[in-house]
Structure formats: structure tokens, C-alpha cells
Image 1 (tube, rainbow, N blue to C red):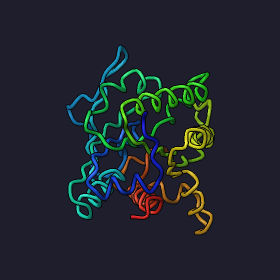
Image 2: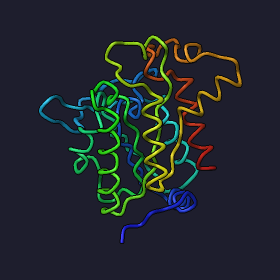
Image 3: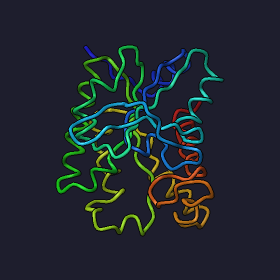
Amino acid sequence: MAKILDKDRVIDIIKNGAKINIIGDSIAAGKGSSQSYSSDKVIFEDDIKKFYRIIAPNSWGTLFENYIGEKFHGCSVINNGGCGASSCQIYNNIRNLINEDDDIVFLMFGANDRKNDNGMNDLYENLVRIINFLREKNKSMILFSPIPSTIENEGRPNRLYHMDDVTAVLKNVAEKENILLVDNYSFILDYLHINNLSIEEIMFEEGCENDGLHPSDFVQKLMFENLKRVLNI
């Protein structure tokens, strides 16, 4: 029977040297942070496009990789975030995205499903399929909600759904499937409220992409701190 691990067990795995695989979209990949760029390494491909590994030394994922690598012997992180990847594309390629020795899989996607007519239903169904597949492979999982985007970015014509819709789906799945959720969306909204700031005031930073969607270095650090907070490590 596939294991369903609670928070304490996930933390124990990390402390004992976990191999962690980040699977998701460009936000997962750390795109938009300073010094980030696309490598020539193809992570996966379909009939529409090739998805290349993003090198992002100032991203939340790399900050976490460096942190646990120093704190817990034997930990490693690989980032398989694909820029522009929808939940359907990730599900269709999930077999190519995981490794047999992965202990924990971080799942962070959904933003690109906002552009599809049936996007939130697609996100729900594909996420549940991915979870079931990973359970069959005996992998532990953590879900991540996206960050808020700016008013201008949310108002673009192809945004049929919004980041709060994506977060609602992820919360629903996390509760039903008993999976730990790192809720970046709510964490950053709380940060903005406490500090009397707008999302626009923290999303733009010199050297970053500054498109209102992809996190600045400052927001990347908030995402990293939120992950540490949730795991209490």
C-alpha cells in the first residue's frame, strides 16, 4: 500500500537526507529572479514545445537547496520546473519528470491553467491524477500555491481565471488528499496586509524580470521563508 506521509514524517525524511524533486511551472523554476536564465537542458517536451531547465541562483528553490544541503547531510534538490507548463502537460510527462530515487516531490503549478476555458477543472483532475501516480510510486509530496500577481497582470485578457482560483483548487485537493500545502498565496497576502504594502511594491526589483507574475528576489526569499516556516526546519 502506498504511504501517505504527514508533516512530521516528511520532515524526518528531509532531516535524514532527502532527494527532492521540484515539478511545476516557471514560478516553480524560479524564472524572473535575478541572474536566472534558460539552459540548453531539455527537461521534457511535447508536440507544442520543449521545456528547458532554468538556472536560477537567487530563486526560492535554490535558496532552499543551499539551506538544507548545509543543514542536513545528504539532501539534494533538482528543479524540473518548465516555463509555460500547464497541469495537462505536466501530467502527460510525469513519468519523465520523476526519478526512481526521489523521496519527496514538490508540486507547484496551476498558473498556466488560468488561460484555458476549463482551466480549474483541468487543474483539479490533473493534480489528482498526478498525486495518484506518485502514490503508486511511493513518493511523498508537498503542494505549493502560487504567489499573488499584480493587478495589471491579473487583468490581461487571457487570464480567464485568477491566482485565488488556483489557490482554492490546491487547498481543496490538499485537504481531500491529506497532503501538506505550502500556501504562498495567503502567506504573501498576510505579509502585505501586516506591512501595509501592495503586491506591486514587492514584485519589482532591479535585475529581475518585473512582469508582475514572476517573483522578484525579495518575493523569492519570502517563498523560501514560508517553506521553512511550514516545515519548521
